[in-house]
Image 1 (cartoon, rainbow, N blue to C red):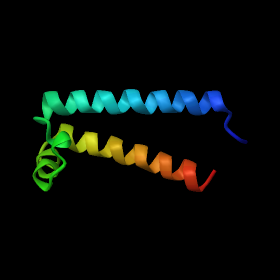
Image 2: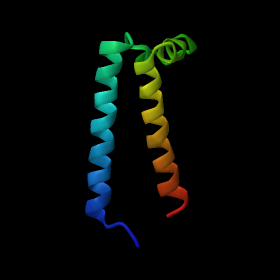
Image 3: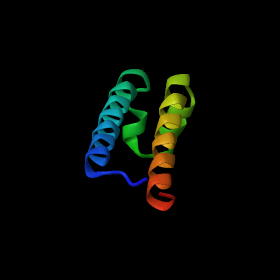
Image 4: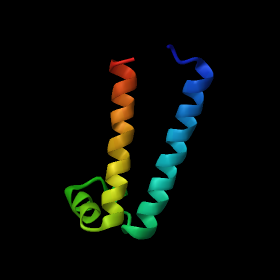
Length: 72
């Protein structure tokens, strides 16, 4: 079953909304570690539970995108 253009558009909007929400959560609860883009920022993210959940959500989004690109 192929996805039509409207479905892809809704998925795109959903991913953008989730990423913006993740950035806001990162700034509020993890001290902006995700926006640093350094090894220190990644260590700050992994050091608390909210940062770990942010990384898991980003990993899930990456997994869905890889599945959509390579296995559809």
